[in-house]
Amino acid sequence: MNRLTNRLVAASAGLAACGLILTGCGSGQISQTADQEAAVNGMSAGVKNIALRNVHLQAVQSGDFLQPGKVVPLVFVAANNSPDVDDKLVGITSDVGTVAFAGDGSIPAGRALVVAAKGGAEEMGSATPVSAEVTLSKPITNGLSYNFTFNFEKAGQTTIAVPLSAGEGTRD
Image (tube, rainbow, N blue to C red; front, side, top):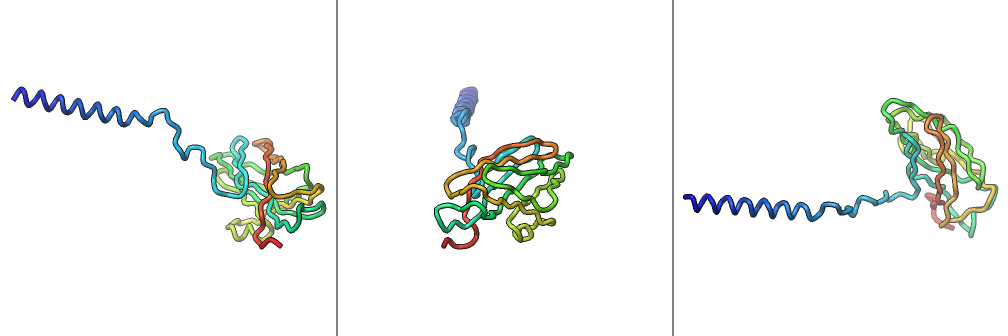
């Protein structure tokens, strides 16, 4: 019986050692999904408790450039990750044009502000329609990104490179 106990102890110790070796093989490695970005058209940024997601200009481009004077919707979601501090989007600026913001920019704690093209906010479930439109002062085109600065009442400001994304319609 003493021999059988010794063998069981040795086998158990061997299995435990194998388990430790196998579980240790992945330690210190970076997972393949750790740095993946969301499959959306726009860019992401954050400033303090505010997370900007899917920020992009939405327009159908029929020529080489969208020319100055054209009005282009700026689309994004601003989520307030604070559990108790409300914030407000007070302004957006860009060197490619003037940004007109329509609606209430308030972002209650734990909620999100959905900014879509006119009529799109209702489709996205936003209770209060909010839109932002850029009247271009410079020509812009697909494939490039343009700097926009978002200014929040409490979180401060952040600048993000915003791409031009195709609109909902077909390309001419």
